[in-house]
Figure 1 (cartoon, one colour):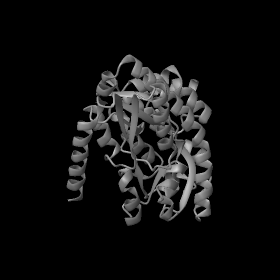
Figure 2 (cartoon, rainbow, N blue to C red; figure 1 turned 90 degrees about the horizontal axis):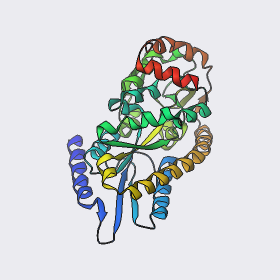
Figure 3 (cartoon, rainbow, N blue to C red; figure 1 turned 60 degrees about the horizontal axis):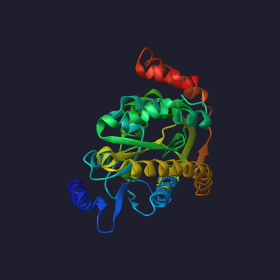
Figure 4 (spheres, rainbow, N blue to C red; figure 1 turned 135 degrees about the horizontal axis):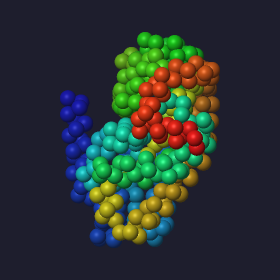
Length: 327
């Protein structure tokens, strides 16, 4: 019944969006509607607001972004589907689920391939990063850019994770990505895909024993209220990806596309500056709430995933890993 109600609401919203999207002839303003799953205090939401400001500036008020945060338009997957049919202009998704559209995106879900944040951004800003972003275009999507989503670490309800052995027998929520599932299994956990909007309840009811995400998401979701142990193993660095609907993108003039591209670049720079502060503040706040924050020795985790890395040898993903490590 709940799923039916959600579907009905989504269809109703879709009808409204379809009626109102695109070019508003009366005001002579092109309205781009953007949906996402995050809290309005998240740095990515703030960066989206900045994107709207910059786009209005570059277009002299002839383009406008309207944002629907906090899963108002559905899950990430549902909003991607709205993009594909041109009923929503933009959304933010984690790179992990995008492997269902562009297989090379799975490289971001492979653990411990980035040395540090500088190396991570060197890859994203490289020709390889652009190539990975363009891989979604065959699926009626347009990659606009990457946002910083930091590193993902484990948080659990009943015990800390100091070593991969501590994950054995624990049901860990993961992104809906085969590679994310395989990563947690390689580290010893029982990977359990659950949508972000349902995760708080899943933790509360014991459907899962823990999850993994970056500090701001852990804090803003209030998952720390249930999962009281946060182990900073930093196993993967999975960027957020801003997507546009390719049908909507193609409906824009070349000038409008240029304005949106420039505004997105400004937004990425803005969000990166916010991210580090947000990460530090989030860790301080969960500690103040009584969360036990652990910094485990990563060597055992790195060793545990070596067979997983080896499984990609002599494959296109293996070649990508080699290129990334060489940068």
